[in-house]
Image 1 (cartoon, helix red, strand yellow):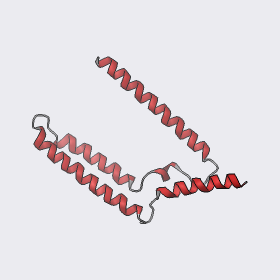
Image 2 (cartoon, one colour):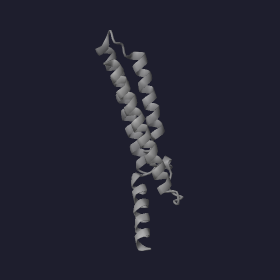
Image 3 (cartoon, one colour):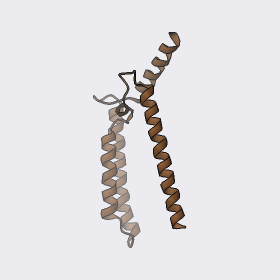
Image 4 (cartoon, one colour):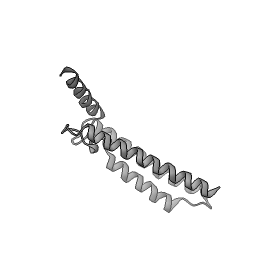
Length: 122
């Protein structure tokens, strides 16, 4: 049973990696004439802080979470994760509302709609 689950998991990961790679190449080719589109602009505002929060939560899991004494240590780990989530949400919310260097998601859709309207009017 363990070997079959591992092979299924490996197959699913390879399949999803290939799908994501194909989609990324397609999107890159679709927008190659546009100078204002980049994959980095598709990331949510505050993504670096979100990544740092994920690393802090993983470190918290390895330091605080104990299988022998699960519930008390789980509460400590949950508190660290919840604090990271709240801080990340606050940072991302502030960046979305206009701090310099932020990217608003609706800008990407506005750009795509302008491109479609331009193509239709030609």
